[in-house]
Length: 370
Image 1 (tube, rainbow, N blue to C red):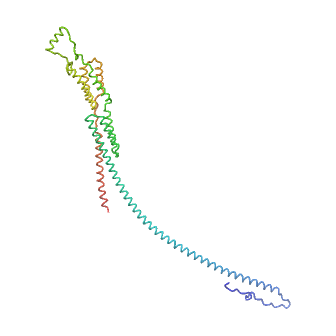
Image 2: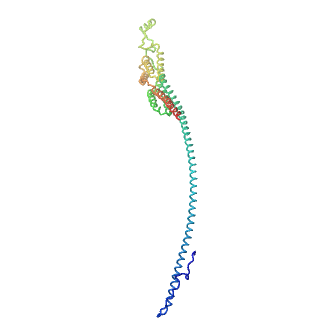
């Protein structure tokens, strides 16, 4: 203990009380005084112990406070170190964030540059594709125009409806391969003219040619009129008189025939030529000429050949049936699809020029902009 405790001997509480004066008539009481002294000694001892315990507790409390203060100081020092470390880490992190921000900014600029380059590349590829497509379409449109013009001239010169229809079919195939949708409506006009050509074709041309060929083969075997045959030698006075006058005057009957009866062989050849001309007109898709040639052949059969013969009658019936089938049809009006194609191409040729003239001021304004 840091302080000295007073001993019981030095304490004023433990001092013996002065002896009471003895009463002259009562004897002295020693037991009560001893007990009182013992009690007082116990009280003094308890007070001394209590004071020492309190002193010890104060010293112990001071030691605990000292240890607590030391621990708190060490913890505060640790927290300061941690705060300093966190501050350093925050500074390093801020520096790294700044570096990352700069890197991101540079990367963003590079990405924007790459995007601009990619956009320019896409524009270049689109322009190249547009040029290639326009060249492809131009080639197909040139082919279509050539086919339509050829079909028109072929029909006008030779009346070749099947050949013109075939040319229209090829033109329709060429238009189908064109990528520009503005020319899709032209295919309807081409198809309409093609259908008109197909309807104008004779439906039984091959059969008609076969019939004419059979007539040409059977024509030499058909009999002529009885006037053309050699008459038997007549007897009698009138026969002799006719024979005598025949050397001076000759009387013949032609029955309205274009040739004399004596030239019947030439009439047979002319009829064969009319049938051949009808075949040629059918092959040339000229129903008017074919009808005229058949009409002349039928007239020759009626005038020069024997009407009573069954073969001649059958030949005339066949010629009449052919003439009925060869009724002249109205010519097909071609050229509407060709004119429409030329108009569309002229309109499309004006579009690039207008686009270029509109793009030139915009390019000049962008170049003058600071």
